Length: 157
Image (cartoon, rainbow, N blue to C red):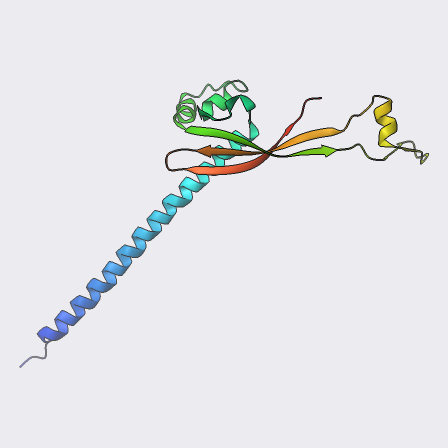
């Protein structure tokens, strides 16, 4: 008689192969899910960067597309890009976090004389007023996406 595998051995091998195959499929499925989440997070970060760079008080608490944020500043000739920007619809919200003021401080004359000018002297002469910025939290939210980013906006003097 020829040596062969018994039915029990064959069934055990098939069960082990099935368990290993199911584990590999589950791992592949999880990897695809996390890759999709990573892609969505990356795209949201890019969209937030565009919104933060073009923050506009007029858009506060309104539903806008990325195209609405850019159309006044840029001429977008590429039809595919324009269609993509119009398809990215968000609820745009701004929150004032803080106001930042940079005083001119003490400046030294560039001639090497060492004469120092106080910020009040410069302001009194009408030369350089303090520089002020608003620290703003820009929030974009859509049906399944949400994100926030801090940005600064100069305050007009």
